[in-house]
Length: 188
Image (cartoon, rainbow, N blue to C red; front, top):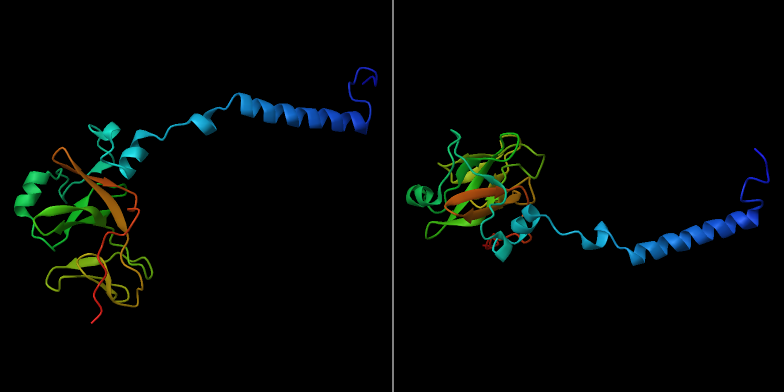
């Protein structure tokens, strides 16, 4: 290649060229901001975090909760048959995972569901209605009907997912609530 046809002849010109390019790139970024500054949050994320936002009025986030036979769970039918304090098994999230809805007093569906994964070693815990407990078959950890630890070796409560009740539907959102809404267990 002919040295006269190459625009940069020495190190000093190369450094000037690089500095000028860097300054031009920064200036272009300030003059023409693109996706990083003007990108909006997608509707699924917005409505999962803030289900009562006005933009989410007719939007149903997450996936429909269904019973073990695959039938969608309707709020009015669930309220008639549910017993407060007894978790209700539901499906809907990927991989055929099972979660448990929490029914509060007054037949109100809580805005969270329990993910039955032991926080000790990740085993799937099972609901035992006769003992009113979730019990881990691997190492015997026990959790109350809200998923709080009552006996170790687990140290943390069962994880939660978000539940949205809207338009007579129960929707599961694979995202934990920002704050754990379960009341603390009273020390005795």
